[in-house]
Amino acid sequence: MSHSPATFTPTATQLRRATWATMAQFFVNGATFATWGVLIPSVKDRFSLSDALLSVAMLAVAGGALLTMGHSGKWLAKVGSARGLRLAGVLYATALLAIPVMPAFPLLVILLLVFGTAMATFDVAMSVQAALVENARTKPIMSTLHAMFSIGGIAGSALGAVPGLSPLPHAALIAAITLAVALWGGRHLLPDSLPQATESHADGDRHARRMVLVLGCVAFMALVCEGGMYDWAAVYMRDVAHSPAALVSYSYAAFSAGMALGRLFGDRIRARLGGIRTLTVSAALGAIGIAAAAALPEPATTIAGLLLAGLGMANLMPIYFLAAARVPGMNAAESIAAVARFAYVGMLIGPVMIGGVAEHAGLRLSFVCVALVMTAIALFGARPVRRFI
Image 1: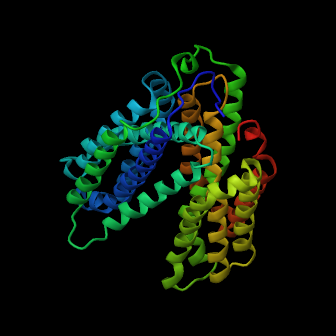
Image 2 (image 1 turned 120 degrees about the vertical axis):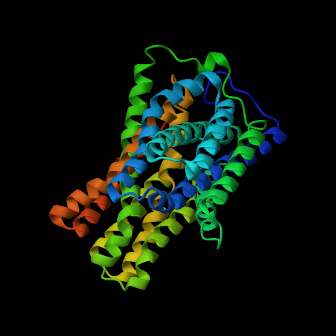
């Protein structure tokens, strides 16, 4: 069913090509971002950076993304998500390729701001395309698309483990794939709604903006939990569950595997249960998983709890992004960008918040707090999206 006054209706062939093109965009986004993660140690060694200066480089990426979110939505509303993906993809690939050859650290920081800007714009544009594809299909696909991001991340990081592959060839290969997908996929993506359906009003619709604000707040809560698990799972496994060193990395792997599996099967679950019930059950699973790890801090229980938490958290953001794209009275690119900004902030400060609680009350209590936040999402998180999914 269409959720805007006037939308393009693709043929079956156009929709199939757009689906594959969008899946490819999600894949290269994950691969490109993961490649930056793999390049970080070489950046530290090349410039002999302290941990503090390395943090500046990492914050530049996040800063570029956060500073861009407010503007990227408005820009994409004007140029369209398909063209936006092509242009952002070219910039994204070029910036990645330049990282290993930057001659000075200050120049690298500037480049990483550009990299973060391109990443955020690409992220918002591909989310708009994902919503367009889902709206045109008879079956859900949003979670599968997000799973492709995870698979791309695995591919990008795994390439870094290939013996003899130095940072520049690694970055060049991923940049070439990203560039090819951006240019090829741009020809097959769906056009956004017709102009009368996408024009932004100066003040916007207050009710629409209020709904997007609520969606953003819940997305913030979800990403606080997700970001916290990514950064603190291994520490919890070692320091609280007292795991042998050989098993510590399994905690991160368990949570990541749960996220990937949850997204791979999320669309089937949503097709069967519906969006509201899927969101509620997912958040409840996340709460149960984290609570189990906190209640029984042993290696086996912690790994099982983190796997369950990953399965639960996997489909929260796909549903919230889809709901944001369907808010009436506001362009999809702008609403997704607004929700994404909240989500990025949650991902960034979630680990810091958990660390602050851990410093004063212990990491185990931090996990209890995460479980409580997930419980709140299970109880109340479906209300903002009830009209849209």
